Image 1 (spheres, helix red, strand yellow):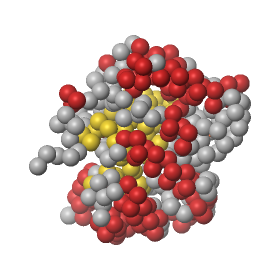
Image 2 (cartoon, rainbow, N blue to C red):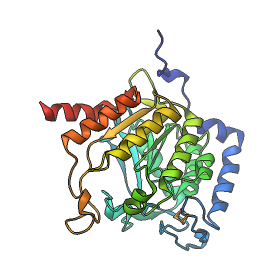
Image 3 (cartoon, helix red, strand yellow):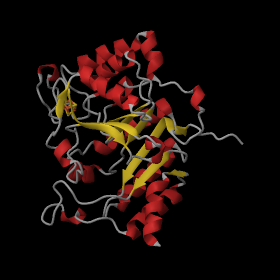
Image 4 (cartoon, rainbow, N blue to C red):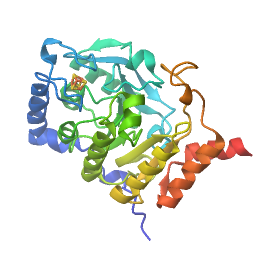
Length: 324
Ligand code: SF4
């Protein structure tokens, strides 16, 4: 029987090429840049004038800030392959996760202001190094800036698939702007309940926004498909970080994924939570520990009970090895 999740490499072209050739990418870029004037690019709806460098919750103005870019060998096997995922880490963030594991970058904005021509050069450099894709990390607040740079990069020969690697706090409009541009959506789905999201992400509307955005991502690109070498080419890959004492959130999220997107949705159930950011012995002390083996096993069991058929194997193997 043919593999339903195989897309032969010879049949693949990055989604943005057609849009670029038809002239629609230029139209999309215009619309996106106009959004910066009264910024409602993400569900925070700050309505600040970012064209004039007014800052909202994400503290980002007209240009993106980039913290680093390099071939990332720590991503999922289907993204990193043998030569790495061409990762570009954007500074600042529209979420305020108290357990943030990139606190200096996302809360303190460590990085360098990067105009579009420089951002385009970064993409081309990563392509030249042999990376398998371009992986935009924390792109929610810089969608217009990405499009602006992408346009220049395509003109100069960019041909790699794009990965939109988001915390999941995206507006529907942003995801619609990215239609037929992004090949692989990789959203986190962090928390299920509004109250939990208020406490730990400072965004009570996160669960609702994430559900809406992920549904749209899935509508655009469907389940994750791979080439003959197991490299992801198109589709949705959902990440969920299992958190201490928050297994109910995990269960609800997994049930929703199966019910709304289907049992063939590709999910990475991550086990690497550790206390970081503002979490300590005095504040948020209830999540001031790693998860236990029993908690991770329970999360995997929830995935099975929900009927999920495609779990990323890396955390599962790591966990199995630790239990030997
Ligand atoms: S992208 Fe930034 S300024 Fe715009 S609405 Fe979101 S947090 Fe506010």
